[in-house]
Length: 189
Figure 1: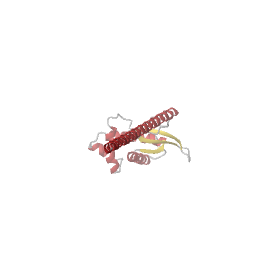
Figure 2: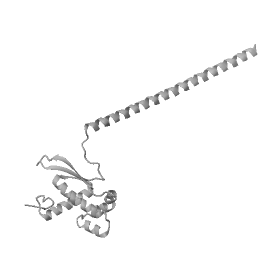
Figure 3: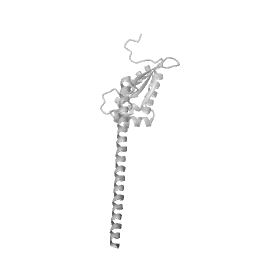
């Protein structure tokens, strides 16, 4: 019996489990989101959270401690330069486990392990949210069509005004020409 023994064995030896957790942590820091089984995700979550907490200190001993587990230098730089800055003053809870369901081949429960500050999560959209988003989209479309019709009306009214002005100018010019011609006719008589 395993009384008071923390953690999961994951059916591996201790060295194999350590290698698995370091690989999962490296992949998580590199890609910000990984897909694995629920048991591995929960075990990796505790491992990763301890590494991020240690990395938040930012001094040389902390960097050396984290470098014992994260062998990739680019990922290590990204952890200390970007991830720790984005975590900020968050008091833990840097990761999220989202369950996905069973794998088709062997029926294992799958989950996504992701960094909270980088991803919005894989949440199922409820029917209420879908209807609200449809209503918002319909309102946007109606506003756009109203604005388009207002623009069209404004353009037609402007073109009507221009046409009326042109017609009045033509009439004025014709009346002026007729007056000039009548004046010339009177002078000639």
